[in-house]
Image (cartoon, rainbow, N blue to C red):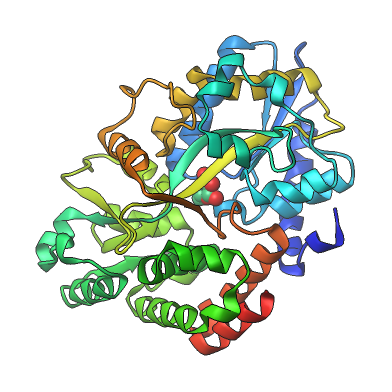
Length: 422
Ligand code: GAL
């Protein structure tokens, strides 16, 4: 790992707990099937996400029953615990068979360290033409394809409980800007509901909220300018967006600081909260809830001011060098590139497939809408909180700034910190 990508102390501490879990899981796994043991590290332990992964693994095992799966999660939304754990194992030349990673900038520390095998040849032949070009580019930061993307999430959504909005008298069609959304939170609050169900326990939740607020207020070009390192030219814009997020925080659930994203999202399902901002993995939770139907009890809108924008969050699997199970890992990477894999995984995950030839009839109406929105989108951009937008060393400094922001909600101080990072 290069100097640039040194793990911050905070991330390192988060990781040490997770490494303990790895050791324990390792002890329990003495027996290996003939096809080898496939150790897969990921962070999908929340409701719909766990179901999606299990559906993927079931499909894989139907074709490869001789491979034993060592399903070894490093829980923590948006990979809060995974990267330090994986970096340590890669440095120690003791990687798992495969691990979850965002395509794009997040791959760079690993490609810089030659820690990933090229996987071009492992992708199913037809997959090469069927994948969207931009996705293939993200999977090949240095030329060779080094990962297999399996999903595309949209980040710039706002979800809401339809009955709560009706009861509070909020007309969602009248919310046209991030500022209007603040007024809606206030109206929900006056009617006795939580305005915005949010988690502030980990900084990524507030970072992604700021990303979509900023895009909604100032547009994608300004956001891209920020990603390109021009924060110093955007001080006023950054400050304005941070101020609005600080205003939003007045309407968060009281336990925002101690809950995970899926627990916050549950407040929308129970009807305690009006809105939730998140990637569409949140919809995976609604799909699993009883008596909670799309269009009846819950609905969504693109985050105000970002219609026509599709903020991409993708996930992929890689083949680390020094691979403990080359055959099984190759089989898994190859499987993930298939229609079968993407058709099982995505409907449950709340994401759309990166292959354009996956039949859509298995997808729920909400995801059909997302597919249409994706096809009709004017711009696709990446996110900092979900790894594709900035190099990991910068992304983790931005996260640190947001960890402080969620303590003091001081826009001036955080604006300065963000400017200084670049
Ligand atoms: C993202 C990831 C999604 C989802 C989300 C919440 O970073 O790409 O698949 O897991 O975090 O944890």
